[in-house]
Length: 381
Image 1: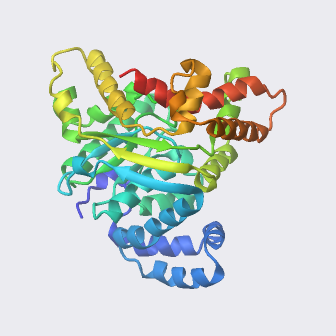
Image 2: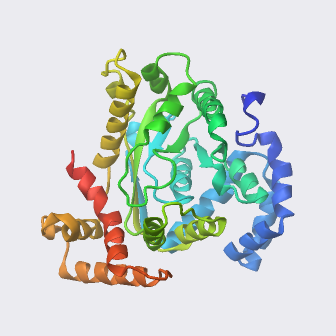
Image 3: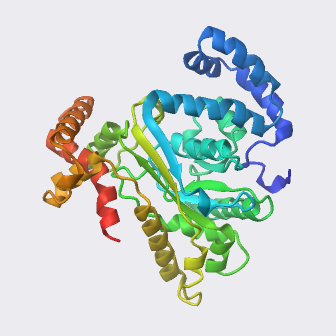
């Protein structure tokens, strides 16, 4: 394992740190409470000694995390599929850049599917705003996550971004280790997935060549996550109304925890992950002498289009699009029963929203947008 003390503040744990970290977790009351909720008493009697036996990240991920993720998907989805394996090689490192549907599950699903297919799991970029307790921080770093520092001053932002970018380049170039990062900070609440240009600027900072060559070094590979149902849709709609009425509204830690819990344990229907191709060949066609801002816009557009073309659609997506913008364009993609089920689902989700002055038409429209935007974006191609 290649070590570099320069990145000790943000890197995942090393294998020689696994045993004491697991011991810390097992001594934490909150962690044990979570485990007691996931396992029966008899199951925990088998899991705990296994957990104590792990001495490296690979065993921790392959024999605990992967099983937990697949078990969770069996309980909260009707199926989870993945295509595009022919686009990646076990010998290469990739910067998987994807749309972002679920706070926790997106990267967990990717890593578990990679492990199941004998690929190396990814290191995961995670914002420090989600590391609400010391035990959560321990758990995610044990699960190969590195920390994106967001709670810093404007003055510190440049230095922090450079530090993060250098770590990403070090991980791809020196460790030959793939990573996962979302295309934007936080989820696209309306599912209008657009690559945040500041993310691309950050990714390029840590290289030693031109902007384009620095991105080529990272081997950017877009992924598209498609969830039939988003269990957090009503929470996102609620946040839209809160921000409409108070431009300074910000979620609390309790809000973040509720979103994580709802995303994990809520019903998701069908899930599909499509692995795209590396965009290096597309980047090399761009004019490296163009201004950086122009190049950033062009690269963002390339990534967006690769994600758009790899969406997987369900009847709910076509119905939502037709209801908002499509004038029954896709009526052959769904049935009358599909329409009734979707409208009932939307009403039930809106009913869960607890707001004074609840604007039901606005909330309904916002929820339908979440299911319609992927179709709208695909049509742009």
